Image (cartoon, rainbow, N blue to C red; front, side, top):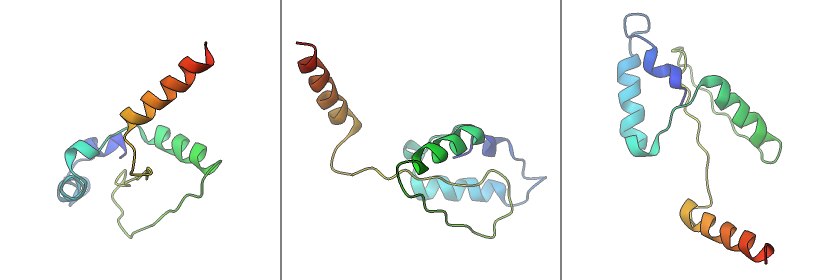
Length: 94
């Protein structure tokens, strides 16, 4: 998510508090991460060089409420991936 969302105030954009809660309820707090909007755009640009990127737009007009999802393969954790990568690197150094 855009890090800036936590600073959007309810008095300026009515409904933002409810929207933040809905995002947390939908995705779970542990699955969410926030980075500056400019970094999000950079990551999307980088991903677009290798993968197709799908954008789904809504009519919401509250700033910084975009939710970005990166889908992983689902059958391997980052921990296992790192173990495999480390083993490959170690074998190359022999």
